[in-house]
Image (cartoon, rainbow, N blue to C red; front, side, top):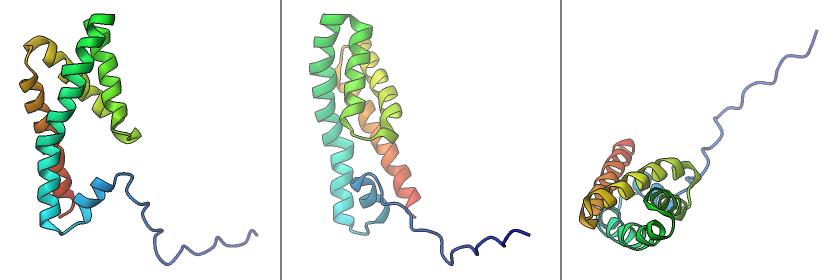
Length: 132
């Protein structure tokens, strides 16, 4: 008869380190000051900055050069790639497409900033719930 299988290891293998140090901060930090500054950055500063770059600057150039639909797609691909996360690429691409469409339909960058801030706030709230 074949030999018996080896016994299971006494402990499960350690989880791989998070791919995103900011995610690690939210999930593992008990430093309230760091969390507050992270939340302000994620929900206010990042949406404003990213919308200025991707929807106020890149999208109009791409739309003038290649048409509105291709412009939205290209600026959204750049937006998703700029976040440097393969795991988050597709959701960020979808967000970018929605924000690009919103920018073209409304003509207002403020609508994009608010929607982006809401997305980040919702994501942050879910991450904080996961860390409980």
